[in-house]
Image 1 (spheres, rainbow, N blue to C red):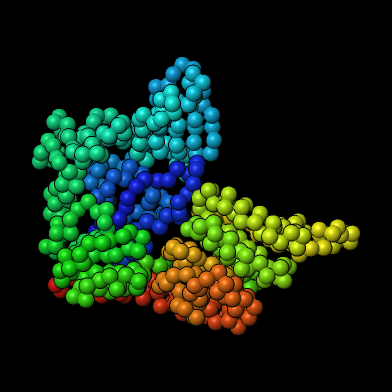
Image 2: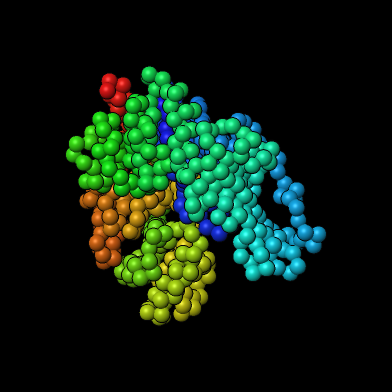
Length: 496
Protein backbone atom coordinates (compact mmCIF):
# COMPACT_ATOMS: atom_id res chain seq x y z
CA UNK A 1 0.00 0.00 0.00
CA UNK A 2 1.25 3.47 -0.90
CA UNK A 3 -0.06 5.89 1.75
CA UNK A 4 -0.18 9.51 0.61
CA UNK A 5 -0.20 12.29 3.21
CA UNK A 6 -0.92 15.37 1.06
CA UNK A 7 -1.08 19.10 1.69
CA UNK A 8 -4.85 19.41 1.75
CA UNK A 9 -5.78 22.63 3.50
CA UNK A 10 -8.92 24.70 3.65
CA UNK A 11 -12.42 23.89 2.55
CA UNK A 12 -14.44 24.18 -0.63
CA UNK A 13 -14.74 27.68 -2.07
CA UNK A 14 -17.86 29.81 -1.95
CA UNK A 15 -18.98 29.58 -5.57
CA UNK A 16 -21.53 32.37 -5.09
CA UNK A 17 -18.77 34.99 -5.15
CA UNK A 18 -15.63 33.66 -6.76
CA UNK A 19 -13.59 30.63 -7.67
CA UNK A 20 -9.95 31.21 -6.68
CA UNK A 21 -8.68 28.58 -9.13
CA UNK A 22 -9.56 25.31 -10.75
CA UNK A 23 -8.53 22.95 -8.00
CA UNK A 24 -5.89 20.31 -8.68
CA UNK A 25 -5.62 18.55 -5.33
CA UNK A 26 -2.18 17.56 -4.12
CA UNK A 27 -1.24 13.88 -4.68
CA UNK A 28 -4.32 12.93 -6.73
CA UNK A 29 -2.40 12.62 -10.02
CA UNK A 30 0.30 10.50 -8.40
CA UNK A 31 -2.28 8.27 -6.71
CA UNK A 32 -4.02 7.73 -10.05
CA UNK A 33 -0.66 7.00 -11.66
CA UNK A 34 0.41 4.38 -9.11
CA UNK A 35 -2.97 2.68 -9.14
CA UNK A 36 -2.75 2.41 -12.94
CA UNK A 37 0.49 0.50 -12.31
CA UNK A 38 -1.27 -2.03 -10.10
CA UNK A 39 -0.41 -0.57 -6.71
CA UNK A 40 -2.98 0.05 -3.98
CA UNK A 41 -3.09 3.60 -2.67
CA UNK A 42 -4.27 5.11 0.59
CA UNK A 43 -5.10 8.70 1.53
CA UNK A 44 -4.28 10.02 5.00
CA UNK A 45 -5.72 13.44 5.83
CA UNK A 46 -4.17 15.31 8.73
CA UNK A 47 -6.08 18.58 8.28
CA UNK A 48 -9.73 19.32 8.96
CA UNK A 49 -11.48 18.34 5.72
CA UNK A 50 -15.26 18.07 6.23
CA UNK A 51 -15.79 18.08 2.46
CA UNK A 52 -13.10 15.61 1.44
CA UNK A 53 -15.68 13.31 -0.17
CA UNK A 54 -16.88 16.18 -2.36
CA UNK A 55 -13.29 16.87 -3.39
CA UNK A 56 -12.84 13.23 -4.38
CA UNK A 57 -16.14 13.35 -6.26
CA UNK A 58 -14.84 16.36 -8.19
CA UNK A 59 -11.89 14.41 -9.53
CA UNK A 60 -13.73 11.08 -9.77
CA UNK A 61 -11.11 9.16 -7.80
CA UNK A 62 -11.42 7.07 -4.64
CA UNK A 63 -8.37 5.61 -2.87
CA UNK A 64 -8.36 2.02 -1.67
CA UNK A 65 -8.13 3.28 1.92
CA UNK A 66 -8.92 6.63 3.54
CA UNK A 67 -8.02 7.71 7.05
CA UNK A 68 -9.00 11.17 8.26
CA UNK A 69 -7.52 12.29 11.57
CA UNK A 70 -10.48 14.57 12.20
CA UNK A 71 -12.97 11.82 11.38
CA UNK A 72 -11.27 9.77 14.08
CA UNK A 73 -11.30 12.67 16.54
CA UNK A 74 -14.98 13.34 15.80
CA UNK A 75 -15.97 9.69 16.06
CA UNK A 76 -17.08 9.40 12.42
CA UNK A 77 -16.69 5.88 11.07
CA UNK A 78 -19.00 5.91 8.04
CA UNK A 79 -18.99 7.72 4.71
CA UNK A 80 -22.72 7.28 4.23
CA UNK A 81 -24.61 10.52 3.67
CA UNK A 82 -27.79 11.65 5.33
CA UNK A 83 -30.31 14.13 3.99
CA UNK A 84 -30.09 17.61 5.50
CA UNK A 85 -32.53 20.42 4.77
CA UNK A 86 -31.59 23.94 5.84
CA UNK A 87 -35.25 24.50 6.76
CA UNK A 88 -34.73 22.05 9.64
CA UNK A 89 -32.59 24.63 11.44
CA UNK A 90 -34.24 26.95 13.97
CA UNK A 91 -35.45 30.08 12.18
CA UNK A 92 -37.38 33.15 13.40
CA UNK A 93 -41.11 33.10 12.66
CA UNK A 94 -40.80 36.04 10.25
CA UNK A 95 -37.79 34.69 8.34
CA UNK A 96 -37.66 35.39 4.59
CA UNK A 97 -35.38 33.51 2.22
CA UNK A 98 -33.90 35.15 -0.87
CA UNK A 99 -32.39 32.68 -3.32
CA UNK A 100 -29.27 33.45 -5.36
CA UNK A 101 -26.84 31.06 -7.11
CA UNK A 102 -25.08 28.92 -4.47
CA UNK A 103 -26.34 31.18 -1.65
CA UNK A 104 -29.56 31.85 0.25
CA UNK A 105 -29.92 35.02 2.32
CA UNK A 106 -32.20 34.76 5.35
CA UNK A 107 -33.74 38.01 6.63
CA UNK A 108 -35.61 38.74 9.85
CA UNK A 109 -36.94 42.04 11.20
CA UNK A 110 -35.80 43.81 8.03
CA UNK A 111 -32.14 42.86 8.43
CA UNK A 112 -29.79 40.12 7.30
CA UNK A 113 -30.09 37.25 9.76
CA UNK A 114 -28.02 34.50 8.12
CA UNK A 115 -26.50 33.33 4.86
CA UNK A 116 -26.58 29.72 3.68
CA UNK A 117 -23.76 28.71 1.35
CA UNK A 118 -23.98 25.66 -0.94
CA UNK A 119 -21.33 23.68 -2.80
CA UNK A 120 -21.38 22.85 -6.52
CA UNK A 121 -23.61 19.82 -5.84
CA UNK A 122 -26.20 21.75 -3.86
CA UNK A 123 -25.05 20.54 -0.43
CA UNK A 124 -24.88 23.02 2.43
CA UNK A 125 -21.29 24.16 3.06
CA UNK A 126 -21.91 26.53 5.96
CA UNK A 127 -24.43 28.82 7.59
CA UNK A 128 -23.26 32.24 8.80
CA UNK A 129 -25.29 34.16 11.41
CA UNK A 130 -25.15 37.96 11.77
CA UNK A 131 -25.99 40.54 14.42
CA UNK A 132 -27.96 43.76 13.84
CA UNK A 133 -24.82 45.42 12.46
CA UNK A 134 -24.41 42.53 10.00
CA UNK A 135 -21.24 41.31 11.71
CA UNK A 136 -20.79 37.55 11.76
CA UNK A 137 -21.48 36.06 15.20
CA UNK A 138 -21.53 32.33 14.51
CA UNK A 139 -20.75 29.92 11.72
CA UNK A 140 -21.96 26.35 11.22
CA UNK A 141 -19.68 24.25 9.02
CA UNK A 142 -21.33 21.22 7.43
CA UNK A 143 -19.82 17.90 6.53
CA UNK A 144 -20.50 16.58 3.02
CA UNK A 145 -22.24 13.65 4.71
CA UNK A 146 -25.03 15.91 5.92
CA UNK A 147 -24.48 17.07 9.51
CA UNK A 148 -23.09 20.02 11.45
CA UNK A 149 -19.39 19.27 11.76
CA UNK A 150 -18.23 22.37 13.65
CA UNK A 151 -19.58 25.54 15.19
CA UNK A 152 -17.31 28.59 15.10
CA UNK A 153 -18.18 31.19 17.73
CA UNK A 154 -15.67 33.84 18.74
CA UNK A 155 -12.23 32.27 19.12
CA UNK A 156 -13.58 28.78 19.83
CA UNK A 157 -14.37 26.09 17.27
CA UNK A 158 -16.39 23.16 18.62
CA UNK A 159 -16.22 19.82 16.79
CA UNK A 160 -19.21 17.44 16.76
CA UNK A 161 -19.99 13.86 15.85
CA UNK A 162 -22.86 12.82 13.58
CA UNK A 163 -25.24 12.61 16.54
CA UNK A 164 -24.61 16.20 17.63
CA UNK A 165 -22.36 15.44 20.63
CA UNK A 166 -19.41 17.78 21.02
CA UNK A 167 -16.10 15.91 20.99
CA UNK A 168 -13.49 18.63 21.48
CA UNK A 169 -13.03 22.39 21.40
CA UNK A 170 -10.17 24.33 19.85
CA UNK A 171 -9.29 27.92 20.69
CA UNK A 172 -7.84 29.29 17.45
CA UNK A 173 -6.22 32.20 19.29
CA UNK A 174 -4.35 30.25 21.99
CA UNK A 175 -4.28 26.89 20.13
CA UNK A 176 -5.53 25.18 23.31
CA UNK A 177 -7.60 22.00 22.84
CA UNK A 178 -10.19 20.72 25.34
CA UNK A 179 -11.45 17.13 25.06
CA UNK A 180 -14.95 16.05 26.13
CA UNK A 181 -14.25 13.67 29.03
CA UNK A 182 -17.31 11.57 28.16
CA UNK A 183 -15.32 10.19 25.24
CA UNK A 184 -11.99 8.39 25.37
CA UNK A 185 -10.19 8.69 22.05
CA UNK A 186 -6.85 10.23 23.03
CA UNK A 187 -4.28 10.19 25.83
CA UNK A 188 -5.09 13.48 27.57
CA UNK A 189 -8.06 15.73 28.24
CA UNK A 190 -6.24 18.93 27.27
CA UNK A 191 -3.53 19.85 24.77
CA UNK A 192 -1.55 23.05 24.41
CA UNK A 193 -1.47 22.68 20.63
CA UNK A 194 -3.78 21.05 18.10
CA UNK A 195 -0.78 19.73 16.15
CA UNK A 196 0.27 17.70 19.21
CA UNK A 197 -3.08 15.93 19.22
CA UNK A 198 -2.95 15.31 15.45
CA UNK A 199 0.59 13.91 15.69
CA UNK A 200 -0.52 11.60 18.50
CA UNK A 201 -3.29 10.14 16.33
CA UNK A 202 -0.92 9.61 13.39
CA UNK A 203 1.59 7.94 15.70
CA UNK A 204 -0.93 5.67 17.45
CA UNK A 205 -3.56 4.95 14.79
CA UNK A 206 -1.76 5.15 11.43
CA UNK A 207 1.92 4.30 11.70
CA UNK A 208 1.47 0.95 13.52
CA UNK A 209 -0.49 -0.26 10.47
CA UNK A 210 2.32 0.50 8.00
CA UNK A 211 3.70 -2.84 6.84
CA UNK A 212 7.17 -3.72 5.61
CA UNK A 213 6.41 -3.29 1.90
CA UNK A 214 4.24 -0.20 2.35
CA UNK A 215 5.39 3.37 1.75
CA UNK A 216 4.45 6.74 3.17
CA UNK A 217 4.50 9.52 0.58
CA UNK A 218 4.48 12.78 2.53
CA UNK A 219 4.22 16.28 1.06
CA UNK A 220 6.62 18.77 2.64
CA UNK A 221 4.58 21.82 3.49
CA UNK A 222 4.91 24.82 5.81
CA UNK A 223 1.34 24.27 7.00
CA UNK A 224 1.89 20.59 7.82
CA UNK A 225 0.60 19.61 11.26
CA UNK A 226 2.84 16.56 11.75
CA UNK A 227 6.63 16.99 12.20
CA UNK A 228 8.92 15.29 9.66
CA UNK A 229 10.61 13.38 12.47
CA UNK A 230 7.41 11.39 13.04
CA UNK A 231 7.94 9.50 9.77
CA UNK A 232 11.71 9.01 9.77
CA UNK A 233 11.83 5.36 10.94
CA UNK A 234 9.30 4.30 8.29
CA UNK A 235 9.76 3.78 4.52
CA UNK A 236 8.94 7.38 3.63
CA UNK A 237 9.25 9.32 0.39
CA UNK A 238 8.93 13.09 0.72
CA UNK A 239 7.47 15.21 -2.06
CA UNK A 240 7.63 18.91 -2.89
CA UNK A 241 4.61 20.48 -4.57
CA UNK A 242 5.10 23.88 -6.21
CA UNK A 243 1.67 25.01 -5.00
CA UNK A 244 2.55 24.60 -1.32
CA UNK A 245 5.54 26.53 0.04
CA UNK A 246 8.13 24.74 2.13
CA UNK A 247 10.85 26.80 3.80
CA UNK A 248 12.08 24.14 6.22
CA UNK A 249 15.42 22.34 6.35
CA UNK A 250 15.65 19.69 3.63
CA UNK A 251 18.43 17.95 5.55
CA UNK A 252 15.81 16.75 8.03
CA UNK A 253 14.65 14.07 5.60
CA UNK A 254 17.99 12.29 6.01
CA UNK A 255 18.59 9.50 3.49
CA UNK A 256 14.96 9.39 2.37
CA UNK A 257 14.24 10.29 -1.26
CA UNK A 258 12.71 13.63 -2.20
CA UNK A 259 10.43 13.87 -5.26
CA UNK A 260 10.25 17.38 -6.75
CA UNK A 261 7.56 18.35 -9.27
CA UNK A 262 9.28 21.45 -10.65
CA UNK A 263 12.91 22.12 -11.61
CA UNK A 264 12.65 25.65 -10.24
CA UNK A 265 12.82 24.18 -6.74
CA UNK A 266 16.15 22.45 -7.30
CA UNK A 267 18.23 25.50 -6.33
CA UNK A 268 16.57 25.52 -2.90
CA UNK A 269 17.60 21.94 -2.09
CA UNK A 270 20.80 21.14 -0.20
CA UNK A 271 23.29 19.19 -2.39
CA UNK A 272 23.44 16.42 0.22
CA UNK A 273 19.74 15.61 -0.28
CA UNK A 274 18.85 12.89 -2.79
CA UNK A 275 16.05 14.01 -5.10
CA UNK A 276 14.38 13.23 -8.41
CA UNK A 277 12.18 15.46 -10.58
CA UNK A 278 8.83 13.86 -11.46
CA UNK A 279 6.26 16.37 -12.72
CA UNK A 280 2.65 16.04 -11.62
CA UNK A 281 1.37 16.43 -15.16
CA UNK A 282 -2.16 15.60 -16.18
CA UNK A 283 -1.41 13.35 -19.13
CA UNK A 284 -4.84 12.44 -20.51
CA UNK A 285 -5.47 15.52 -22.64
CA UNK A 286 -5.63 15.58 -26.47
CA UNK A 287 -4.18 17.95 -29.05
CA UNK A 288 -6.38 20.94 -29.85
CA UNK A 289 -8.04 21.89 -33.09
CA UNK A 290 -7.22 25.60 -33.41
CA UNK A 291 -5.59 25.07 -36.82
CA UNK A 292 -9.00 24.18 -38.25
CA UNK A 293 -10.39 27.63 -37.59
CA UNK A 294 -9.95 30.94 -39.38
CA UNK A 295 -9.97 32.89 -36.12
CA UNK A 296 -6.81 33.04 -34.02
CA UNK A 297 -7.86 33.20 -30.37
CA UNK A 298 -5.29 34.69 -27.99
CA UNK A 299 -5.86 33.65 -24.38
CA UNK A 300 -4.45 35.95 -21.69
CA UNK A 301 -4.51 34.55 -18.14
CA UNK A 302 -5.13 37.67 -16.03
CA UNK A 303 -5.88 36.13 -12.62
CA UNK A 304 -2.56 37.36 -11.19
CA UNK A 305 -2.16 40.52 -13.27
CA UNK A 306 -2.34 44.04 -11.96
CA UNK A 307 -4.28 46.71 -13.81
CA UNK A 308 -1.22 48.46 -15.24
CA UNK A 309 0.25 45.16 -16.45
CA UNK A 310 -2.92 44.19 -18.27
CA UNK A 311 -3.19 47.64 -19.81
CA UNK A 312 0.41 47.54 -21.02
CA UNK A 313 -0.02 44.13 -22.65
CA UNK A 314 -3.29 45.05 -24.36
CA UNK A 315 -1.83 48.32 -25.64
CA UNK A 316 1.26 46.47 -26.91
CA UNK A 317 -0.96 44.03 -28.81
CA UNK A 318 -3.19 46.77 -30.23
CA UNK A 319 -1.25 47.43 -33.48
CA UNK A 320 -1.51 43.75 -34.44
CA UNK A 321 -5.18 43.58 -33.46
CA UNK A 322 -5.90 46.59 -35.66
CA UNK A 323 -4.25 45.04 -38.73
CA UNK A 324 -5.58 41.51 -38.08
CA UNK A 325 -9.07 42.36 -36.84
CA UNK A 326 -10.66 39.81 -39.16
CA UNK A 327 -8.78 36.89 -37.57
CA UNK A 328 -7.29 37.73 -34.16
CA UNK A 329 -9.47 37.69 -31.04
CA UNK A 330 -8.44 38.34 -27.44
CA UNK A 331 -9.96 36.53 -24.48
CA UNK A 332 -9.04 37.55 -20.93
CA UNK A 333 -9.16 34.38 -18.81
CA UNK A 334 -9.89 34.58 -15.09
CA UNK A 335 -11.50 32.79 -12.12
CA UNK A 336 -12.44 35.64 -9.82
CA UNK A 337 -15.34 37.88 -10.86
CA UNK A 338 -13.50 40.90 -9.42
CA UNK A 339 -11.33 40.83 -12.56
CA UNK A 340 -14.32 41.89 -14.67
CA UNK A 341 -14.05 45.50 -13.50
CA UNK A 342 -10.37 45.56 -14.43
CA UNK A 343 -11.18 44.26 -17.91
CA UNK A 344 -13.85 46.90 -18.45
CA UNK A 345 -11.51 49.68 -17.32
CA UNK A 346 -8.62 48.56 -19.53
CA UNK A 347 -10.86 48.25 -22.59
CA UNK A 348 -12.34 51.69 -21.86
CA UNK A 349 -8.80 53.08 -21.66
CA UNK A 350 -8.01 51.61 -25.08
CA UNK A 351 -11.12 53.20 -26.59
CA UNK A 352 -10.26 56.55 -25.01
CA UNK A 353 -6.65 56.42 -26.21
CA UNK A 354 -7.63 55.44 -29.76
CA UNK A 355 -10.98 57.12 -30.49
CA UNK A 356 -12.72 56.39 -33.79
CA UNK A 357 -10.07 53.86 -34.81
CA UNK A 358 -12.05 50.67 -34.22
CA UNK A 359 -15.38 49.23 -33.16
CA UNK A 360 -15.62 46.72 -30.33
CA UNK A 361 -17.28 43.29 -30.38
CA UNK A 362 -19.63 44.30 -33.18
CA UNK A 363 -21.96 41.47 -34.29
CA UNK A 364 -21.24 40.19 -37.77
CA UNK A 365 -23.50 41.61 -40.44
CA UNK A 366 -25.12 39.42 -43.05
CA UNK A 367 -23.30 39.39 -46.38
CA UNK A 368 -26.59 40.45 -47.99
CA UNK A 369 -26.55 43.72 -46.06
CA UNK A 370 -24.34 46.04 -48.07
CA UNK A 371 -25.13 49.38 -46.48
CA UNK A 372 -22.42 49.95 -43.87
CA UNK A 373 -22.40 52.80 -41.40
CA UNK A 374 -19.18 54.69 -40.70
CA UNK A 375 -18.66 52.68 -37.52
CA UNK A 376 -19.13 49.41 -39.38
CA UNK A 377 -16.34 50.37 -41.77
CA UNK A 378 -13.87 50.46 -38.87
CA UNK A 379 -11.84 47.36 -37.88
CA UNK A 380 -13.95 45.30 -35.48
CA UNK A 381 -11.84 44.21 -32.49
CA UNK A 382 -12.99 41.18 -30.51
CA UNK A 383 -11.85 41.66 -26.90
CA UNK A 384 -13.80 39.69 -24.33
CA UNK A 385 -13.50 38.25 -20.84
CA UNK A 386 -14.03 34.56 -20.11
CA UNK A 387 -14.46 33.26 -16.58
CA UNK A 388 -13.20 29.69 -16.12
CA UNK A 389 -15.44 27.76 -13.75
CA UNK A 390 -14.49 24.15 -14.52
CA UNK A 391 -11.84 21.98 -16.13
CA UNK A 392 -14.20 21.42 -19.07
CA UNK A 393 -14.57 25.19 -19.44
CA UNK A 394 -10.82 25.68 -19.68
CA UNK A 395 -10.28 22.76 -22.05
CA UNK A 396 -13.05 23.88 -24.40
CA UNK A 397 -11.40 27.28 -24.76
CA UNK A 398 -7.84 25.97 -25.12
CA UNK A 399 -8.98 23.45 -27.73
CA UNK A 400 -9.64 26.37 -30.12
CA UNK A 401 -6.95 28.79 -28.86
CA UNK A 402 -3.81 29.56 -30.87
CA UNK A 403 -1.61 30.94 -28.11
CA UNK A 404 -1.66 31.45 -24.33
CA UNK A 405 -0.14 34.34 -22.37
CA UNK A 406 0.60 33.83 -18.65
CA UNK A 407 1.89 36.53 -16.31
CA UNK A 408 3.50 36.66 -12.85
CA UNK A 409 2.32 33.37 -11.31
CA UNK A 410 2.25 29.84 -12.68
CA UNK A 411 -1.05 28.02 -12.93
CA UNK A 412 0.05 24.38 -13.31
CA UNK A 413 -3.28 23.15 -14.64
CA UNK A 414 -3.67 25.85 -17.30
CA UNK A 415 -0.04 25.57 -18.39
CA UNK A 416 -0.09 21.79 -18.58
CA UNK A 417 -3.38 21.91 -20.46
CA UNK A 418 -1.85 24.34 -22.97
CA UNK A 419 1.03 21.93 -23.56
CA UNK A 420 -1.40 19.04 -24.00
CA UNK A 421 -3.38 20.84 -26.72
CA UNK A 422 -0.14 21.85 -28.43
CA UNK A 423 -0.20 25.65 -28.35
CA UNK A 424 2.77 27.96 -27.64
CA UNK A 425 2.90 29.97 -24.41
CA UNK A 426 4.34 33.39 -23.60
CA UNK A 427 5.16 34.25 -19.99
CA UNK A 428 7.50 36.24 -17.75
CA UNK A 429 8.61 33.35 -15.52
CA UNK A 430 10.23 29.93 -15.90
CA UNK A 431 8.35 26.66 -15.49
CA UNK A 432 8.82 23.02 -16.34
CA UNK A 433 6.06 23.26 -18.94
CA UNK A 434 7.83 25.87 -21.09
CA UNK A 435 11.23 25.49 -22.71
CA UNK A 436 12.30 28.90 -24.02
CA UNK A 437 12.32 29.13 -27.83
CA UNK A 438 10.99 25.57 -28.14
CA UNK A 439 7.30 25.61 -27.18
CA UNK A 440 7.08 29.24 -26.15
CA UNK A 441 8.99 32.32 -25.10
CA UNK A 442 10.05 33.89 -21.82
CA UNK A 443 9.05 37.55 -22.17
CA UNK A 444 10.43 40.33 -19.98
CA UNK A 445 8.19 43.15 -21.20
CA UNK A 446 4.75 43.67 -22.79
CA UNK A 447 6.60 44.56 -26.00
CA UNK A 448 8.24 41.12 -25.89
CA UNK A 449 4.75 39.63 -25.62
CA UNK A 450 3.63 41.49 -28.75
CA UNK A 451 6.75 40.29 -30.59
CA UNK A 452 6.04 36.74 -29.42
CA UNK A 453 2.47 36.85 -30.69
CA UNK A 454 3.73 38.05 -34.08
CA UNK A 455 6.42 35.34 -34.06
CA UNK A 456 3.92 32.52 -33.65
CA UNK A 457 0.77 33.84 -35.29
CA UNK A 458 2.62 35.48 -38.16
CA UNK A 459 4.60 32.37 -39.09
CA UNK A 460 2.93 28.96 -39.27
CA UNK A 461 6.33 27.25 -39.26
CA UNK A 462 7.17 28.70 -35.84
CA UNK A 463 3.76 27.68 -34.51
CA UNK A 464 4.18 24.12 -35.85
CA UNK A 465 7.62 23.83 -34.21
CA UNK A 466 6.03 24.67 -30.84
CA UNK A 467 3.35 22.05 -31.49
CA UNK A 468 5.94 19.38 -32.27
CA UNK A 469 7.90 20.15 -29.11
CA UNK A 470 4.71 20.08 -27.01
CA UNK A 471 4.04 16.58 -28.34
CA UNK A 472 7.59 15.52 -27.46
CA UNK A 473 7.20 17.01 -23.99
CA UNK A 474 3.95 15.15 -23.37
CA UNK A 475 5.50 11.89 -24.58
CA UNK A 476 8.41 12.38 -22.19
CA UNK A 477 5.94 12.83 -19.35
CA UNK A 478 3.51 10.14 -20.46
CA UNK A 479 1.84 7.97 -17.84
CA UNK A 480 4.15 5.06 -18.69
CA UNK A 481 7.34 7.09 -18.28
CA UNK A 482 6.21 8.77 -15.06
CA UNK A 483 5.12 5.41 -13.66
CA UNK A 484 8.56 3.93 -14.36
CA UNK A 485 10.17 6.81 -12.46
CA UNK A 486 7.87 6.32 -9.48
CA UNK A 487 8.46 2.57 -9.44
CA UNK A 488 12.20 3.20 -9.38
CA UNK A 489 11.80 5.56 -6.41
CA UNK A 490 9.62 3.09 -4.52
CA UNK A 491 12.02 0.22 -5.14
CA UNK A 492 15.00 2.30 -3.97
CA UNK A 493 13.20 3.26 -0.75
CA UNK A 494 12.58 -0.41 0.01
CA UNK A 495 16.34 -1.04 -0.18
CA UNK A 496 17.21 1.72 2.33
